[in-house]
Image (cartoon, rainbow, N blue to C red; front, side, top):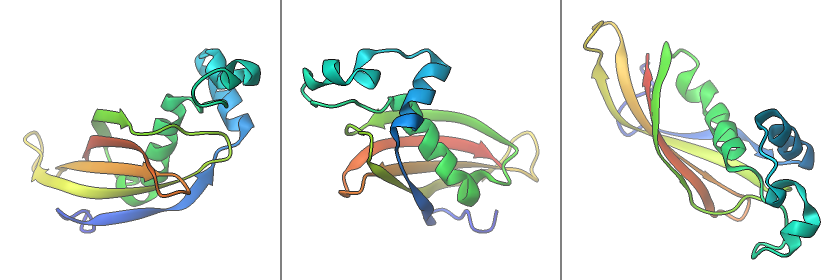
Length: 139
């Protein structure tokens, strides 16, 4: 909890290279069978010209990348907000995440706990931001 001071920043490591298997398994598990994610011939006719990685996988992956630094000792994730997809993610992209503590206050229900608001950005190997979100955790 002492590392989570207002203004503290974290570069989460390691990054993750997205594989075709990652994308396909997530599509199967979540029943997202949109052809832009799984049909190469269909995707070639889109403005991106190749398969897009499922956005909810990207979000889940980036949240997972933050656990070691941010929420390993959390009691609960209280909420996520302002999830914004800033750019496309493709198979073969490598993603990196960074977070910043925005606010910290004692819990109203138990003054031994803290409610912490954090923003997270992720970028690809070209240093282009691809997703942003805020979350609130209870520690």
